[in-house]
Image (cartoon, rainbow, N blue to C red; front, side):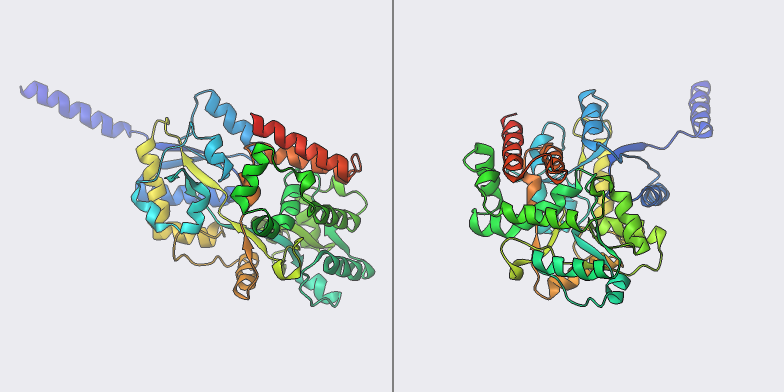
Length: 409
């Protein structure tokens, strides 16, 4: 008996001495935060819980990488997607969070994008705002003080900047995702007011009873893309995200169409840059100009992953921990979906919320309701338009064709 007890004790001591490796959660994510911010979160979570976080930060073609991992059965414990249509697109993979206690700590508006048939399909990881960002010093030097609300207003600004030798826009048109974001905001209030709301609009598009070519307000969408191209330098299709960041940070360009996620990158180049947020011009007129703001980036627990309970514990920590709330504000510099959290000290978010406080409307990222994977296809079609490969009617036909193909899958 003594020998048996001694053997058990010895085995325990050996195990302790060997130092069992801490549990590691594997996360496949994209640009909701910087690599540095994710590294900071990893260190904080390990210190508080003894659990390690392994962030696989994918910077290009995230959906292809994610699909390959899921199809191979090599599931990450948690994975990041968009909201809305991806609730359906990834329905075979996400764990139902409906009955988790931490869900009640999240803002209902943020939860709307991750709700499918009454089920909470994922954790709204952050709230983001986008429109036209401008360099305040450049605007001051050009004597610009007005807040533009229409496409015509933006052209007036562009002419003033051009007269001062400043390139008005850095287009970013090389990036397929910049084009849809620039374009779809133009239709936001019209879809809500004229086409029965976002869900009804997408339902009609999915059924084929409505097409882009039947939406007369698409003319304003093309007008905005044309304007940015016209005043966006000699080679707008060679301008990518990094070019946008460099141009506005250096003051060589006055405006870029981007979101609050661009601010940390700009400040890495010019730490004292002064940035502002402008309203998105819309087809419905000046009074409806607003900000595109939503909780679209969604962190989902893989229901067939190896560490479901530990993954849920991480989400609970995100929603309840004081450390997490501080991380969102200081390290990630992002707006959180958690009730009662502070606005991050970022110029873009502060100005966006100030504009909303003065009565400007906020619009959801409704185009994320389009069938999963369609955003890139539509972006490529719009790239064809801005390169002059297709005219407006041909572009509308191509958009309709791409949409019909995706909806039929």
